[in-house]
Length: 356
Image (cartoon, rainbow, N blue to C red):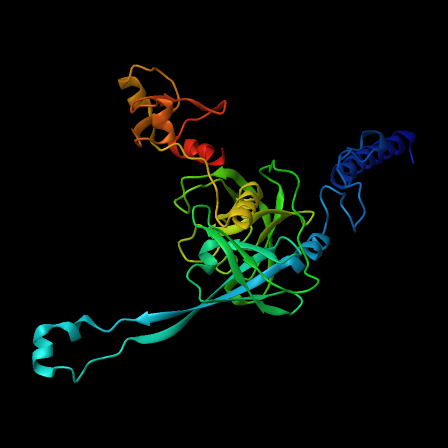
């Protein structure tokens, strides 16, 4: 075979081999497969083991529940309701034809309801909501350990919706109360109570807001809002933090269906404990009082008074010979501070006055 022909075949083979190698490299080699150009993916992993995420964020709240639940009780109330007879029996025309032959006797029926409460002291004091026991003829308290007993009403305060009961049993558990009065939005909370009478139940959520007022639930409002599921029967139960410490008394829900929609309200312990101590000591709540009718100083009202952007409340009325009258306050005066604390709304001002 001539050398020229041989070289021609050799060159063609080399060209085909290079082309084949290029195709194979193009289709079967991944970008960045070289060790020196391999991309690095950065990920974050927890530094804690599977059993515990740290003291600030425990994986389980079982320890908190174990601490708190023995002191949370179920409250069952009953009262006798008299059903009045129909007004038709009192109609003169009806009586003319039938006289007293169809005279009816008012019927009595027993109405029952349920709620929750918290044992604050091993002396036997139980904290709950006023609306849980209001008008009750009989109150029965059921403990988590299975014991039941009758409860006596020490006193109530409808203005804050707080009631104090007393039970007489030995070796009563009591709940720990949080020392921290500053509650932060986002803190984990647990709601413990007896929803719908199914038995003691724990639900978990966070603090959604603090200082909620103007809800129309009670006269003095400074509620803690939470998305922990609160349902009928939870009223008077405990709202505890992640350490099982009591931070509030579950009171109400905002709902269109009657069930939990993630908007529940609890009375903070700063109000609940203060009211409870006054009830135990005096039999009723003791509050500051000025004898004034207050109105929020809205921007339009402030402008009409020529006050500019001043925030405060207007004294709309003064009770004769009351504390405010004796101090010289008059209708039309504007209050901007109470005990050096600025006030901008009437309800806020009345709340501050009540705590004095």
